Image (cartoon, rainbow, N blue to C red; front, side):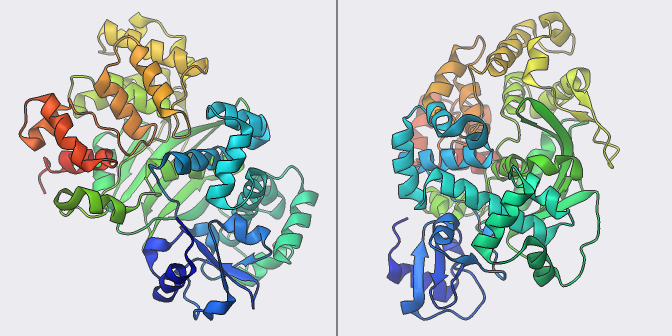
Length: 481
């Protein structure tokens, strides 16, 4: 968004949640920066400076507020090509791609030059990619010091710092505190030691948590996912530099804030940035319900705050989509559960129903058609699953929100057995593309009382660029409440 100081100050005075995460306000008299929803008394307008990102405020010499905690601000989904490109780069940086691939590698994966990447990134966030990465590490460390009992050394490495010495020096330079001092100032007492880490991930309200929970629950893979009361749980695999980190996560609605309460196993402490990023994608926490409702109109009125479920693992979602071709949700769930049990990795968790991590693409790529077909999958579809796995395993197909949409869709369509419905469903969930529209879907046709897929496609034009959200509303309209 354009940072018009008059509009920003009005939003600050009103504590307007619609602007949370869209800008940050820095106060020259205190040298502290806040979210626009901060509960402190609004400063005088002449003392305010507005920045497009927390990183920009910190580079300008401001410290994060300990009350509103800028590190908890929600993200911003966008369909604007330039903005989406910058945010894709930010997502890759949060996944530590800058450490492993450098800026040139990130630019190459996005199909642009590193010079163009610097330009669009600076325009969106007001800082360079390196400055952004540095701030993200510090803010994650601040969160871990505030919310967990991890030792300072573990906090440093979990946040992406290569050494404790570098972490201490930068933390002291930027925040004018030692890490241990921040923990004492915020908590006032020692945090209890736990085998799990707890976080709150903010969203822009409203958020239809019952609808999200119901959608995920209806498709939960036995052994991999489960619903327990109001919580959603699943096993996860995060691979960093060729090493698999296995664990579990629990997600529920916060009772205090507009946020989801997330608990993760301590086995995932070293991969927190990509882990939290994937949870945000899965739960569509960057969605802007006001913008969506403004386009969808009456369609969105029944369920305000409806989100599009994303993917924790793009390969897993793509396999689900292929298995789900021309079968019911329940049947696809059963067959996918068999595949997970047969080829997944066993894991111990505190929950009896969570026993398996969904198999990796590399594991499935080495399986024969006969072994998959005996699980109840037609041989032709088994061949599609294997072709998909091989394409993902060798890097020719990247199923994340940070990939080139058109290139990925083209490569998906070239796989044997992948048609437009499958490609659009994968784009909707694994690629987090808000305008994906599987217009041949029988559920969408039924909801629209339409039998001609071409007319469904024409009807969808009115919902651009948020057709994926329209799909969720149409599917939900078929359920009984």
